[in-house]
Length: 308
Image 1 (tube, rainbow, N blue to C red):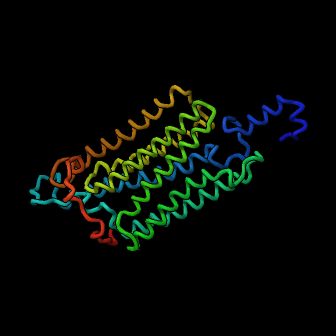
Image 2 (cartoon, rainbow, N blue to C red):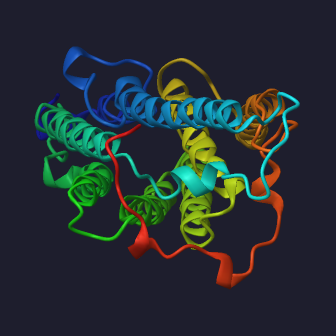
Image 3 (cartoon, helix red, strand yellow):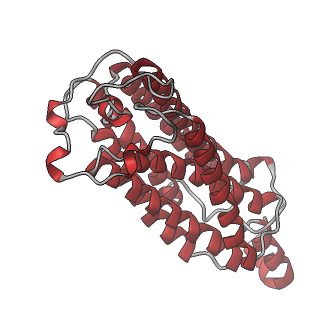
């Protein structure tokens, strides 16, 4: 960095210095490799979302197959008058062990992520950047720290069932607010579009999880929530690549999101087509049928178990 007097005498040097410290610069020193304005700052939270989203999608697929085998679905055997569906067995989550482990993991991961953001801000060469300047980035991690704490309380039976997914819906709603505000302050058109679309993806995730809690018999809504979480991870990774490696033009930002959405949707559709559901056939059509309000289960009557 240059002293103010020297920078004032050489305006071009001042311009180069400001550009070097800006998020649009493709050059990053070792001290700039931490924080949300870098590839690693995007890749680490993207890995977090991708890991959780893929885990619950794979777990849903496995549970559907196990349930179909146990009830004779897809094997040609005769089913009973009422066959338990996936949502009857697993929504809201009944495994104490799973809730506890997810809660603890969320608390640990978000704490480490917050420390990473704080250290990146503390060692940033730009004197205008500090720990409190990164408050928006810290709030992103605090949202999911809250989810982890709620999941841990739910596993102990201290709050009502499915509170963790209610907290997840709230967290994604807050993420929408944070990403939207973060995008509006961007001056580069492509960078602004990337962050505003990130906000909209988070809003869709909040709506999907919220509707799934409201209508717990909808397998479609349950799967959609985790699928959008995976899409959120892919788009966050795209934002990271646009910082360091890829020159994403403004008119191709929407196309990139559309292609990633189609990729996630295609994987989910293929998995649904290959997975049998109770009662015979494939696809888990239980979530597509309309459900009366009287048929929705009461969360207070759900009991937790130690089975995954």
